[in-house]
Amino acid sequence: MAAPSAMAKDPWRFVVIRNRASLSRLAEVLPGGKMLGMASVGLAVCGDKQAALDQHWSYLLQDCAAAIENLLLAAHIIGLGACWVGVHPNEEPMRQVKDLLAMPAPVVPIAVIALGHPGEDLEPRTRFNPDYVHFEKWQGPE
Image: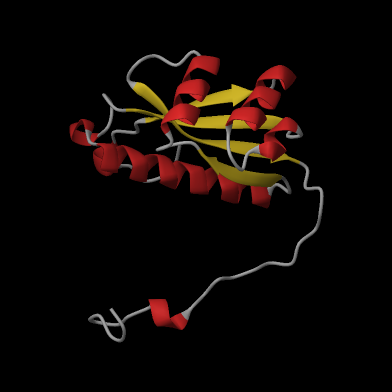
C-alpha cells in the first residue's frame, strides 16, 4: 500500500486467499492462472471504483497496477515466487472471481497474484529494446 495513487485515493482492496478449494477454482476460471492451484496463497487485487479519483477507471487501473508491482517486488525480495494473473477486463472471469470472493458491487477484481516458494530458479531476464526509448521527442518508426 506504499504504491503511488492518483491524489492519494488508494482505491486498491485486497483479498487474501488461502483456501485450497478457492485457489483451485481460481485456477480453473482464470486463463493463464493454472499455477494458482499450486500456490501457497493467492492475493486478489481489486479496485473500488467509488474510491478512485473522479471514479475514473484509468486512475483505478493505474493505482492497482502500481500496488501489484510493489507486491511482486516485495515477494521477490523475501525469496518468494509470484505471478501476476490478469483478470480485468475479461468479463466472464471478472464475474466468476467477483462471485467466488463475494465482492460488493463497486469493487472489481483487477488481478490475482499467485504466491509461493519458486519451483525453479530462473536467470534474471530483460526485454530491454533500445528502439522503444526516445529522447526529447519521438524518433524512428511510428
